[in-house]
Length: 204
Image 1 (cartoon, one colour):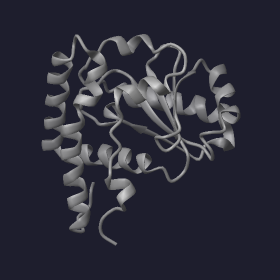
Image 2 (cartoon, helix red, strand yellow; image 1 turned 135 degrees about the vertical axis):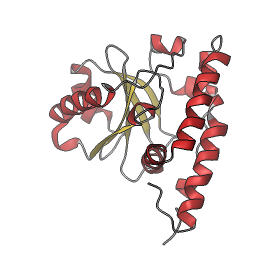
Image 3 (tube, one colour; image 1 turned 30 degrees about the vertical axis):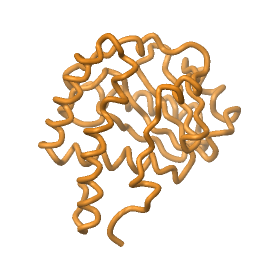
């Protein structure tokens, strides 16, 4: 069947107020500024190391683990923070997975049950953002679609890269606005992804 269901195509736009409501403890220090760096070929290796440690710590609790976000797209400039999607059976059951991750040096920083059960932990160096989701979360699908589209569509990669760099400059005094300011270009790229799927074309 061509196309994706509404829960995938209707992208959730969070607000600064919702982010503040979901914050657990102190916000990471890296959130106080935005640094967009050139693509680093070492980023996939950093993901692989984090994946190995998380998989060893959680064992069978890991349903899936994926490198997502800009550091997962070769050639794309990004904040030098590895984004990882971790799927577990029940993200709300924090007692099942958070203590083991804490022993690895992670700490829980976001609890957002209204956003498909999302939890986020950061590494001790704050250079890994670990997003925890339950199975069948539409965000898991969207993250993979966006990553794979940018890997295979250089025009959109360049468009997104230019937007990221300009927004990093424009929001230098308001780093909290950076992610929200990217919504327009992200939505435009998703429109092309979903249109291609509706036409029966491969997204990657």
